[in-house]
Length: 291
Image (cartoon, rainbow, N blue to C red):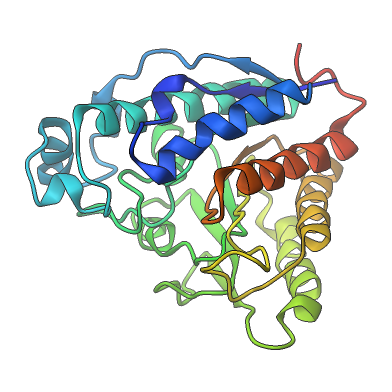
């Protein structure tokens, strides 16, 4: 059993740490025999129209600064193409998960992008993009990144079929709103509080009744990550992932996960990403998710 995974070397832009680490993760999890990696299809940028404002979309497509680099990553054609390719992978992952239950898009950098610009190393919001692309589906984001999903929360106001449960150590402007539940976990007792807080958040899934779950599996809440305030161990992260996967499986909701965050050495982040895949396999291991 291997998890169907969408990834292209195009994702891993050399010289851009946030993206370059994906190459290390892809190599690591493939060598472990955990995934079946497939290339995403070509991406059509016109699908983005209406998700972000037209001025920003044009600036990002053409490299017109400062907007083109507003995510905090210096724009280049390679960065633009990486982001577009990740969105293509997101689409392909959703299509696969709808038929087989689960898929991984080995991408990063989605949840901080707001309507008018990029933010927090996120150029385009690939979580809200799926709700934008598939208005007939009720899409739920479960965001367990160290940083709250502020961009997704803003875009929820524009997308009536999108909702979010966000558990984070650093608020990053994620305050909670209609269809956006924000759970802040930090401080000395954060490790003890984390899983009970996640359980509270996941209890909402039954009442939301989504058609699709997008899981932002952040590695930056790990105790040794320099940006972490949640400060949870590798073992707690594994159980975190299992809990999310179990809810989706038990309620028969297709799920796509992405490997967000992570500011330690790429090899350490890759190990944490591999543990997320292992957690998925522990829940879905009897399915042919690599068919």
